[in-house]
Length: 63
Image (cartoon, rainbow, N blue to C red; front, side, top):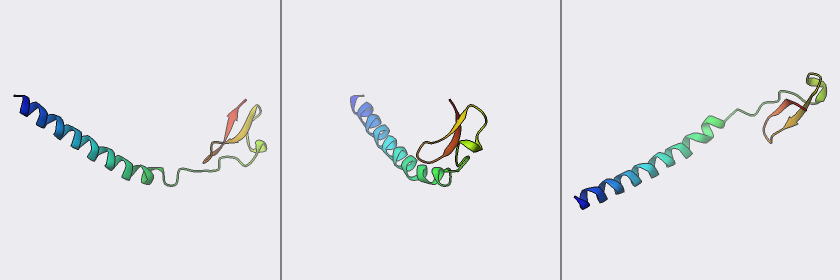
C-alpha cells in the first residue's frame, strides 16, 4: 500500500512538472500582440484622466 501511494505521488509530481512546462511554452504566444497604444498623451483622455504606461500599454487612467 505504501509503495502504491509513493508511486502515485511520483506520477502526480511528474505530471505537474509537465503541465507547468506546457503553460510556460504557451504563455508567450498568448501575450503576443497585447501591447496597444490607447493614448499618446493626456489630450487623448477624458477630463480627469491621464495617459499612463504600464510598460506595455498606454491607457487612460482616472486620477
